[in-house]
Image (cartoon, rainbow, N blue to C red; front, side):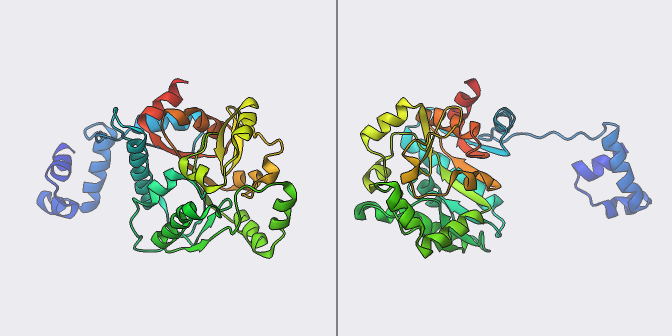
Length: 309
């Protein structure tokens, strides 16, 4: 057993050549190799590469009930932009490795994190998804409208998928306007597509909007944000706000939002959230607690903060 094991594992000799050299059958070589493993002559050791945090990922999955967690390496002295770039690169690599070509993917429109992901993805040799659908209104102020179109257009081109835009703003003045827009045949088609999604790729926001979102005209006002914070809101996914325990903060805000309904979102099998940084810890914690996401890509420092909380 030892001789066969050393020839195969240390010297890289094929099983057929080992059989010839030792005048035994190839079937016996195979049996000896299996027995060598069972009695401990051959042991498997996995050496974790630098920058890979498999143990931390497993702890996140166990602690928060995630289907999958991906933790990326970030320099301890990295600022917010550098952290965003590292998370974007890690998420891009993860998507390139896991998209199989049959998914219908929903994406949030105004996420700087998702834009960092898309900017670091390479075109797929084979189709990566069948369609990419905006999860919330993608219309906004002309000076930043390109952000939403760039994100969806580039991702669909990279994946070889159909791009489906939501030709409406994310937030409107009142429920009557929202209801009127949702009755439009184009929005009825979008609603149907939302119910058929198999995966989402979403940024996780805080109640304070990013620069792009604030400039788009699709953010809540300062007074509205103060009201949301007073009600315990810590995070935002597709303009649906929630508390630290994951419960939605609806009030009168939800009825003004043009985005995938919460129940439809939670029914999607694979809900990937991509976020990191100290300012996102509570938002991520609420997102996993409420089942808004069931997979996460984040950075090491944020992962450690989540586990320490």
